Amino acid sequence: MSKALEGVKILDMTHVQSGPTCTQLLAWFGADVLKVERPGVGDATRGQLQDIPDVDSLYFTMLNGNKRSITLNTKSDEGKAIFTKLIEHCDVMVENFAPGALDRMGFSWERIQEINPRMIYASVKGFGPGPYEDCKVYENVAQCTGGAASTTGELDGMPLVTGAQIGDSGTGLHLALGIVTALYQRNQSGRGQRVTCAMQDGVLNLCRVKLRDQQRLTHGPLTEYPQYPNGEFGEAAPRAGNASGGGQPGWIVKCKGWETDPDAYIYVIAQAAAFEGLAKVIGHEDWLEDPEWNTPKARLPKLDHMFSEIEKWTMTKTKFEAMDILNPLNVPCGPILSMKELAEEESLRETGTVVEVDHPERGKYLTVGNPIKLSDSPVDVVRSPLLGEHTDEIMSELGYGADEIAAAKNNGAV
Image (cartoon, rainbow, N blue to C red):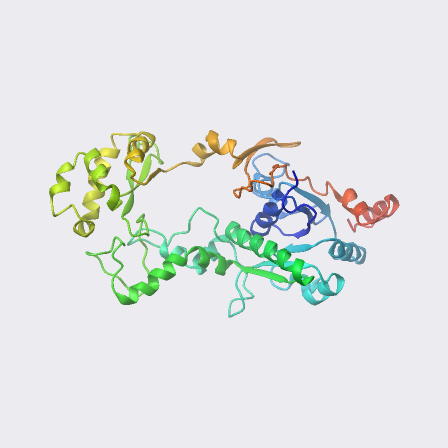
């Protein structure tokens, strides 16, 4: 069975997280990703947050599986000539350098189009055109400038960033969609094009329901937020703690063992349609006849009290017991799963979402596999390449002979 992107060649000039996330996704779908790295140094993450000395870090290995690595000194004339051949040879070039870096190397978009008019040139930027376009951006900066931090955190607390890498990995996902869309259009047009994703834009896209709430706020208070009806609303969409963000009230409540286990909690949504079953199971059948409790509108002013009553019941159950009881009652709920629990979850191994990979220097490690499942494009998750592991192989595919490869190595071009 062939893979969806088989035959597509990607010139991967990315490093750290946003770009490598994108190119790894494309590699899982069968694209041949040629990761260009500096001789002797490589992607900075190879050496960052190392848990085993002198071995590629998990930071690197988990973002660079299924790729081939070629080392190339793009500052030397010979290196530039090899780089030009790579541009001729590939369909897509992906980079997440600081603004203007490739232009300074002599490879502007205009020059790339001259070399290969079919080339799709994809970039991650921090900001789109505007006052901040020359600023460097990292994960948490993107979360703050894209609206995530201002809308995350306790009601009266400071803004919070989330552990989900919505700036880096989120923008990598957006960029991957842009690339396959440009490849599809190229089938009709015969031409390449520029694909740009700004991290601020990607984060804002993931926060679109908060932009929805910002507009609703001009027409009165947001009734599904915990600030209603007893608190105050300002001019901007506020932080809402663990409120569900939808029309149904939800909150995180403690489960048995919470005193010692920081993740012994469950998220419960008190959906109107399933309220009867929820009230009965927590021992509050009395609520069903009581006009103070038996409509969503009556419950709104006392959600704190309602969730504290739900919590009295959940504290007598483990999070998994609570889930087993609430699910058949159609009460939407989910345990707070720790990274340890997710790493050990058998069903995620079976679907290829969590994969164990063997590395020649590190040994076995866990990585996240492809979260996007295609029925006709199988995914084999392959370990990340060693620095420059495929230099000779890629050079020979570009038409260089053994002597020329040896000379390029002696000159420090590769």
